[in-house]
Image (cartoon, rainbow, N blue to C red; front, side, top):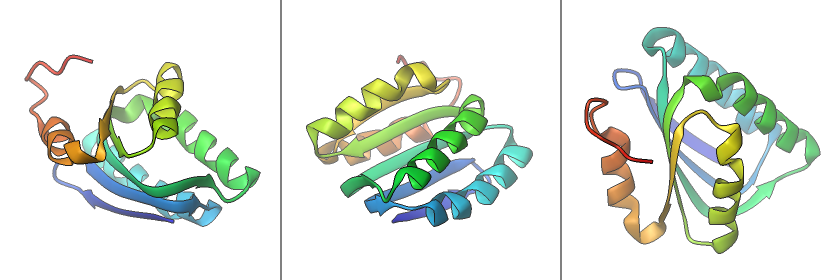
Length: 127
């Protein structure tokens, strides 16, 4: 399941992925993200993984890959917050396929992840 909110004034998507992601999750996210990108030009994403178990099936995984393919150039930053080593590994594996600056945070660092996602574009962010 994917729960998300989008702050249309900042272009920040705050999402929580839990259990398994489905095709319906991506179908719900896509038009909302498209609208903000049309208004803002780009987005930032704070993704919290909570008891995340991957994708429901290959169709859901493919929809996610397609979503990333079509949107990754419009994402400035991605902060991924999780509590499992494989989630950190997955985030590292995805790096070459994502245009955004991406950081992985342990769940105990959620406040730090939020701060980084909200930093001014003019501030040095590292990588």
